[in-house]
Length: 139
Image (cartoon, rainbow, N blue to C red; front, side, top):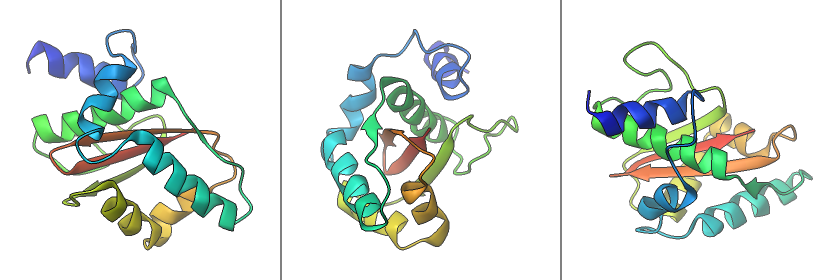
């Protein structure tokens, strides 16, 4: 495992977030849209169900980006990584969608993913993207 991958894994599992910053986490998302675009779509959906709006979180942006990077770098697609670890956050993942709108629609029309998006317990959101591997983290 290369050094960057190890640091990214630390961010995913909450061991240390000091190695990643919001700028890094946003870089790949900006290829297909701004994080605020996803936040707006999620908050519009939440409003339809009477849930309060979420805010973007630097911590969750970093962890979601690290999850997408880890799935890409280690060639897996799962909530559980090859070492058997899970994120400490509520998580939506998707694979293959080319745009924020497409992945949002896939999550919106999937009952489990949709339930995460509108869950009234959540206050914060992070979004990750790497080569059509998408992650949302909620807390």
